Length: 131
Length: 131
Length: 131
Image (cartoon, rainbow over all chains, first blue to last red; front, side, top):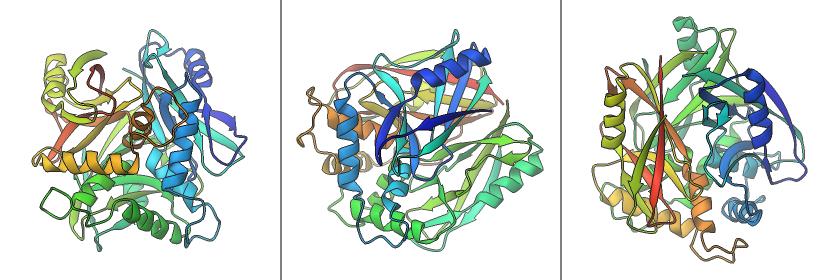
């Protein structure tokens, strides 16, 4: 298992970690198989989506906040229920194929660490399986 | 493949199944690898989130029901379209790392069976892979 | 890695690909293990849900569009921000168990390619792991 550190800079942020994940795959020497990316935090997640036009990230974050506002008479007293709910909607892990040592991603795809209660220093766990 | 039984007690409920999953991993003798948890039902799912403060579960369930109300002029006549939609949003499986025989979960993380059309007796399927 | 082609016919559509995936598993000769289905597009996803009553698909698509309308003052200028956001909510891959050469799906479960910016010709990637 590999542990990466991710530093987020805002309360809500989609941080492109594609090159960090690719680097870990290369270092591990995995040629053919799976790389599973796991976020061990309850107010953050992992998504795979467009990394070309940054306005997509803006739209994603704005819409998520419209659907799940920061303040909404939540019971949980820590003020981050929105982050927990967004994390559940986005999901906390992704499974990515590896072929000839490279992550198999679509033309416009990047891997994003999704921060919903930052800024913080976060961990991202990776595991690889040959297959 | 291992089959666990889960009994839910309400129409909407997040049921902590972490210890059941850990027990299955221990019995299977898996030391290093992956445990995949799969919910074979179309109105239920699996989420990983905070299991410390129970108010988080309340907030999650309330918000999901606000976004996807039980009655909303749905076409499907069984009265559980909300459950199908919530299941799709939450997702029906999770992949969890196993290290030294233990599920790798963040400090506050637990695995939840997410019931959206209960109460019912449900199945939860597990599969393990060494890697 | 196996690449399937999927032709969608509408802007928003849930297309049942269960038999295509099962056929690929059979051809590959996988008996016991995992089949991972991965959508390499940023405005489409993969979901597992009811394939018995087609009205469920209608309800899912209608609700997703209510939550994430096509036009909503998005920043991204391509007119498909809704598709990106829906893709993130639904998720871009699924892990399915294989037992005795058959996909392990619940009684009412089917695998759906989820188109959110069609109609298009799309790819669906599969990878299998014995375990």
